[in-house]
Length: 289
Image 1: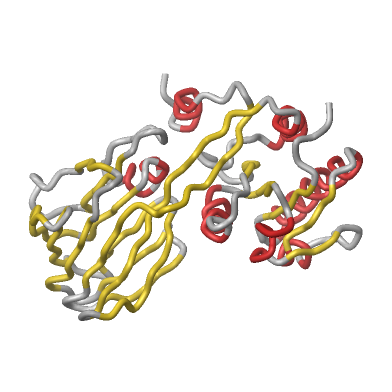
Image 2: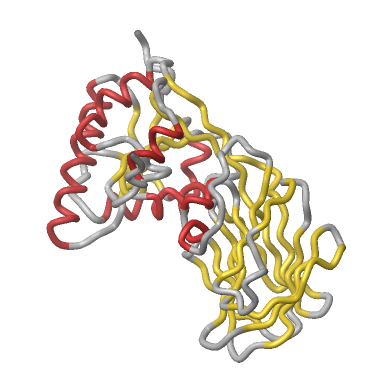
């Protein structure tokens, strides 16, 4: 059967030492295998520079969406998060091959990578749509920063407790003193929000979770709201705080800054083998019985 995808971009995790050598071998194996299948291959530019990929064409991350119709990410969830944000404006699906510890997003195993990719290329796949969050920081009436997040947007203290006011759709919810507040997509509920005691939301739920981090008042509990909600967080008092995007971007905040968070207009598509089961994945990753 012919492949559904004619041009594929491969992106790898950038590491050092023995881990780097292992990833390079896996990337080469994947690129050579797909080339034998008559598929046009690009290696993302920084990945290309990190290994012996001279036989393959290089492409910068920003151009992948215009030249490829599929991206395969070999690394971990962190690598997947960065790539997803970069490709959000293009209708290009992602396949994640896990080189990390958990692999909630990058769920294909190295051991069965080629077999699973073959199945997906032949149309035996599960299409998994994931929502993102769009956040803005306002200082006075001026928007000083905006970002997209696949996992979460976090207002976090730098050291001591911070005081925040939370509004949903213009209605005041509460004032809290805590180490911070996590606003998360269903995807992000298995990340930082999980360790902070938040709920796990199935990716198909149209919802956003709001999870306090070590609140001073124990009655400040996680809540879930409609994905159409607009969430505002006002910084009332602090010594030091910042906004974190997917744990990868960090923007300093000041007193009286206002963070506005809502669902992004576009979604990212992940491709899994046809027999993918979200609950089976949770059972394995979280060591449930």
